Image 1 (cartoon, rainbow, N blue to C red):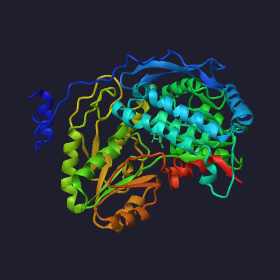
Image 2 (image 1 turned 135 degrees about the vertical axis):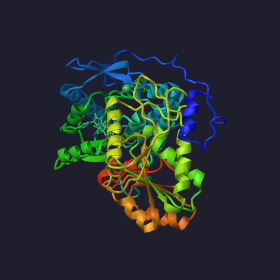
Image 3 (image 1 turned 60 degrees about the vertical axis):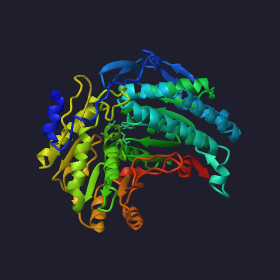
Image 4 (image 1 turned 45 degrees about the horizontal axis):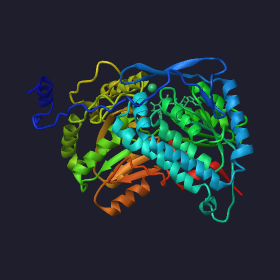
Length: 496
Ligand code: NAI
Ligand code: MG
């Protein structure tokens, strides 16, 4: 028995570690990846250097190595991008017959599908997520969004029967680092299908798949200026938000920046949608299929290192089955593989940035200081890079900060409950309302709970399932407006 297995056995005496599989490394190859050392801004169909000539690095969070550098766009660059988008809107994209617009969007979807492997590897290199997720979820779903909205382009009269639609103009879109390409697709596809043009800003730590997407737009011969992609930080984002010639803002990110955007846009007449934080309750009733629920809880919080706004980041277990669930959760997290994002066996990849790792670690400290009991399986973390083991907290209550605040990491506080009404009250007791989960074999219970939980999405007997046809968005401090589905068209049109 290896030293590692011995340590595991002490931590979890009930698991037979001799029969737990250890896998040989299975890293995805990077031979086919061609990254430039420096990327430029994608404005009016071309890659152009930033006016002020400033660049910053994006690193691989699993190795801390620099992958490439990208521009820090300033006011002059944003002016150029918005002007290109305006001109493309007026001269090319909005006058184009909708079926023609649809063809371009289909072409983007198909090219993305063809190059899926390249995009998946770059997403994992730049952001730290396991290749299994970028390969099976991020990239296919991004392509699916382009396919789906391509279909709507010439059918808007059926989306809004009896009404005509008019595009808004130039959409400013600001995206986060947790699903870089997928968030770009969520935002670009409906904007284009409805006849708008775009200026999109990527997140600081994950610009590379959007840069690749810009290359793909060139290959698809998308008319210049229809989509412009800029890189930069919060200041660059602010310039897009406050630009007088932008008609609509679509933002996904922190609640703090969401509040700033609402204030900045008050009284301007600009339309906006905000998709912000969350603190979803995942609820297991005593009549649930226990093993299925445990697997769903694991997927709900450890998927993408917990960097998911709709993560199942609070667990409520009915008291009678709590000991069993807790034991099974501990067993299961002890088998999760933390490490190289490019390895196909990896369950938990790298934390996206040093800043995010520090935030997660500070919440773990707070959890302990406030009296929570912590469980972490012994796991060997790589020496370089940003990593966090899967973490459970028991002995916590509603008022604990780790129960109320968004951690955005692989940390799960667990509480028990006795009655349905009690758990609904607890589930609703946060400032957020993005998502939730319920595990039971009683249909009536599902309907009661999903009706009373104030959240945009509530999954039943599953978790983190996405589809381009279904709308997504929050209540309360989780945001405003919906993305995805038929509903996701509405924020990009005026009904006339
Ligand atoms: P953030 O909200 O600062 O960043 C999201 C995007 O907004 C980035 O592209 C950023 O450059 C841009 N941005 C920042 N300040 C801006 C401003 N004043 N005006 C316009 N754009 C601005 O999020 P950050 O700092 O990366 O993460 C902080 C926390 O936010 C995370 O720990 C997590 O709790 C939460 N978060 C939630 C996300 C979600 O999907 N709802 C995604 C990312 C973060
Ligand atoms: Mg990076």
